[in-house]
Image (cartoon, rainbow, N blue to C red):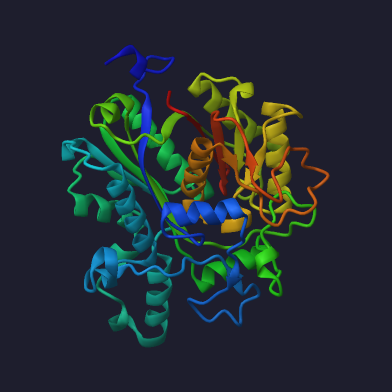
Length: 416
C-alpha cells in the first residue's frame, strides 16, 4: 500500500464512496440536502396512523416513498417498515458507489437501529391480544428482529462477510459507521455498507410523551424541534435511514470511484451515569469527541464545524454544549443541529447526520439550525441560525449520544 494511502498511525485511510438516504427531508441526497440547507422543518401532523388520542400528534415522517420499488409487491409484505427504509437507503448507497468489484466474502454490512421492527411488533401483539394466537403472522419473528435489515441487505447483494446489527439507542447509526471504519482499517473487510434505520409507531410516540421527552407543541409542530433554543421543550419523533459505503482509499482510487471524503476519526465510550440523563457537565461526551480527534490525528483547531446531536431537550442540549466548549473552547467552530429540520430518528440519527456533516464539508456550507430563534443562555456556542454559512473546506465532527449513556463521535476529513 502506498504511504499516502495510510493515516498518521499507518492504517489504511477510509474513503466514503457512496451515500443513500430515506428521510423526512427527501428520499434522495439532492432533495434531502436542499431541504436541510434551507432550514425547513419537516414536522407535521402524523398521517401513517390515527394519532388523535395521543398527547403528541405530530412527527417527522418519510413521505412519497414506495418500498415496492425496492422489494416488489410480494417481498415488501414480509419486511417491516424499518427494513423498508434501511434496505432502500443501502441500495441507493451501493448504486451511488458504482461497480464495487469486490469479493463478496470481503463485503460486510452493519445496520443499526434503536429496536427493530416496531410496527410488526405492535401489530402482532395487538392481533394476539384481540383475536388469539392464530392471528400472529408466521413472518413475525424475521420481520421484527433488529438484525433483519442487515440480513436483507447481505442476502440481496450476496455479501457473505460479517453482517450484524448495532443497537445503542441514539448513538447506533454513528457507531455502525465508526465500527465499519475500524473493519476497513484492520483489513477485515474491503467494503462495508454501514448506516442506521428507524421507524416509529403510536406506542413509541405515547411512550416518549409519557417520559416527557417530546415537545408538546401540537398547535405549531413545524416550530417544535428547536435545538439549543432558550424555549426548547423536547424532541420531535422521526423516522428514516441513511447508509454509507466505506472502503480503503487506495482501493477507491484504483477503481476510479467518486470519493466524498474520509472517515478519519471515531470515538465511543459510555457515561456510566444514568439510563437517560447525560453525565453532569457533558464529561462523557467531551471525552468521546477528544477520542475521535485523537484517532484522526487532529487538534480541536483543525475542525471546521460541529454537527451536534442537539435533541432540543433542555438537559441534553445544555450538557452537549458544555462538552463542546470543553473540547473546542468558547471561541470554537460553528455548530449546527440537524434535528430542527429532521426531528430525532433515534437509531438512524447518527448515520443521517453523518451524511449531512460529510456533504456540508464537501460543499463548504454549514446548514442552519432550524427554529432556533434565541440561543439559550446555557449554550455559549457559535450556533448557525437563520441561514446557511459558508466556511472553508475543513474536517467536521458529528456527535451522537444515546439512552444508556452511549456516546459516539465521527470525524470526517476532505480528501486531498
